[in-house]
Image 1 (spheres, rainbow, N blue to C red):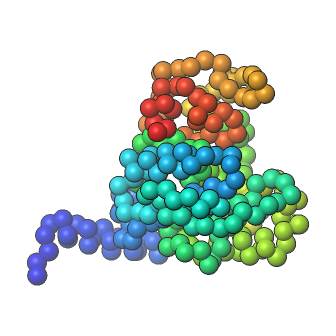
Image 2 (image 1 turned 45 degrees about the vertical axis):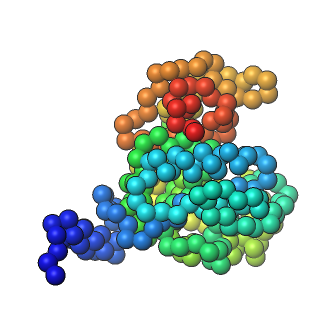
Image 3 (image 1 turned 180 degrees about the vertical axis):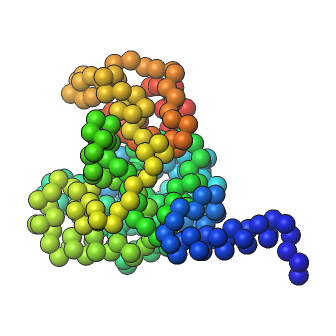
Length: 265
């Protein structure tokens, strides 16, 4: 049976993708053959279910490749359009440690995983993240890059990896929790174990809202928390930016800029 023009085009793209994937190269514009897993993590009550729902909505608006949305959580409540991966809450002495559980090889996850923090704002097409160096472990070049260009550290708000390839993060944590917990949290543990092989997303694709899209000088401390001094309607991220990250304070729910209000829903 003769293939159509579009079928031939897709077949050629898949052959090219296979060759590039074998070399670990960036697959620009190639649609993954299998659905990827969009994964978030929600434990405890820091973020309500509405954060999962809004993340689900933003992904649905800005991702066109096949995917499944999953949430690793201690909440038994079902959320429409979200596959719940239930795990009873684990209590830790200090810091944040729930992300280490994403790397448990026994979790019912599929091949390629794109992890997103609950407090990100997706505002543009994010397909390019699904084809960036497939097979590699990818994270954000920590946003202190804004002030220290040579800074080399991880921000774990958006990461991608292939299931079971990074299981040592979880296994070593289980074996040596006291050693791990000398660090502040899971982000530091992930970086400690993976810094020699992790690569970073292009800086323009994922940016800090408070430091790179807006400015640190626009922040103030009021009522015990950090907030912007003014509300702006003219915020325009870099044209290549797809995701704004809200690390620390303020959270998206506390920002009334038109950009945030229009996209975080």
